[in-house]
Image 1 (spheres, rainbow, N blue to C red):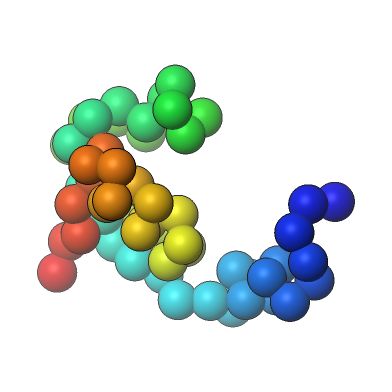
Image 2 (cartoon, rainbow, N blue to C red):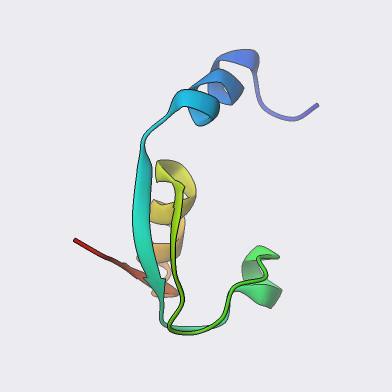
Length: 59
């Protein structure tokens, strides 16, 4: 519904980035993860979280 077909295809096979949450993303990003939790997310979402200081990249 939102976005274009190309973006949806890239997210399906796109690069994943592992992040650790520094703040709860429940309200701002509507994600059900907890502080300290490490998860793999799409690169675009991970970058948004990192830029807003809600998460840090895990090497």
